[in-house]
Length: 179
Length: 288
Image (cartoon, rainbow over all chains, first blue to last red; front, top):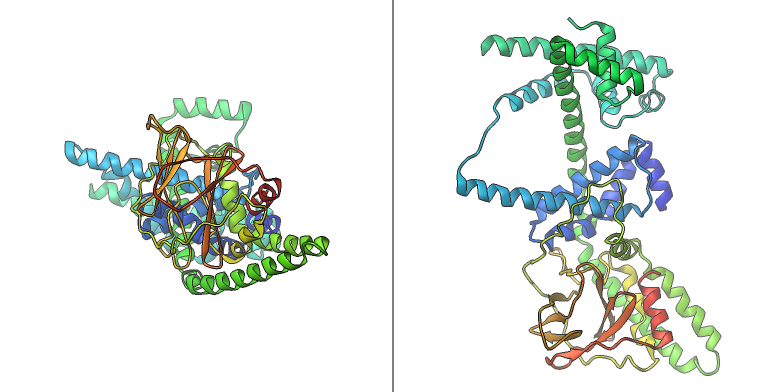
């Protein structure tokens, strides 16, 4: 698989190509973090996050690659690790100042949404994920999930979103009632 | 209550699919309608929830990918290393005996080795060097460089005498061995051995920009390489070549190469390599 093939496959949402990339650059990318005061676990975490950023940009068609894939992923790793180091630094300062503001409301709502997504069927989840995360076109979603045409994909997306809407709204009002 | 049409517009708005006039008028409506604002918040939660769920799913998928091939790579890398050394040895011998009579036979043989060295990882590593000059524009760049002060854990190879590089017997440094190293020997700036590091050699580098007496010098001390001078971070590379258990180290900095001799611990001036054949080999091994 050459660079161009890999990128094309990634753009089409081919998870096997992602797997291939993951293995191929694992050592190189994790080394960046490990040699910059990170643990192996942190390194893996940063590399995975970077790959996911790359994947999301590529599948959504928002990425015009002007460098090698590895160069691009490496720079994402660098940025993510810098942010993580900054976060750690800030955290240690906050510990010293002991002035941490905790937002309880948002995580609670996120949990509710996550729970509702879990209640959807597999196809529904996939349709919504491909649409909102990968930002795939209806055509691509139809092809990937084996729908007859883009209209089927559109209808499916509409219904799934509506279902999620109902679930979340019901849970939210329950939550408000409890509050 | 938001209508179906409102929900559709919200969906397009949050997905950045509303443009121009349509977007402006929707934003105006949003500002004037608190109920619609509430609906937008809810939709935002849902969309970010879907995105988070997908990211978590992908992460779980990556976590389940067996890395045994990679982590066990050390052993096979070592074996490939040895194999590379043997091939390099054979090439050197061939070059030595045949160079006078059949120089053209030798060149292709060496040439054939070169593509093997351009292992994708090495390509990537060298391109990363270039990347420090032009980072992909889609990434939010931060001016602050990574603070790189890792713990030095050195599986240093026995420091045998350095090979004479000023001679055009560059076959000694034939980088064929690099072909199989999953981790390249062309170390990026301040690279240290991989923690999974098995057979992969590496040099710990420390830069001292403040030394008054040594403007552009180097020193090997306590198995570490010290560079004295105004070295810009991320712009230099340390290149290691192994042949017959000998290690030869080069410094690549701002389009020039310098031989780093490991004998003695005194501070030595950096002398630029001028030998065109050696330069060509070094350039090839950098994947240029």
